[in-house]
Image (tube, rainbow, N blue to C red; front, side, top):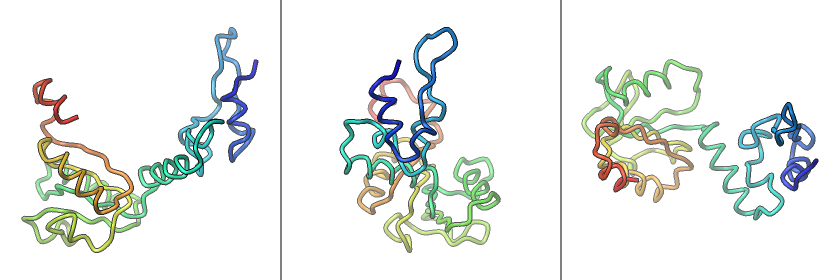
Length: 173
């Protein structure tokens, strides 16, 4: 049996490539492809029958910024190999990412030959994605700075977050 969501998937960009199929034993529907990622130009909101077009377009742009960024800022980049900021920089520079990587580290001039910037405000361009590698207490303000700058998406990897007390974690969230 078909459901409204399946009809929305069929009418979404990509059409029949995103259809429901029953699970073994008829225990309900399964989706052949993950609707959050397929088709690439549509988000889950774009695939539902009741989605607002403006919201769907915004969501698709946010997902593109997160999963297919053209530029990345690493806030809290570090030259210390044990720091998460150094690991992120090493992976971006040593991997297949071809866009600009902009480390934000107020105390460093460069990391592995890449110029560091003192703050988000001093970046030469607005990145699609920011990876936050600063302490947990600075994440909320960093997110506000990134939002004011118009950054498309952010991922927070704050070192020390796991060691915080539950009350402190709730406050940061």
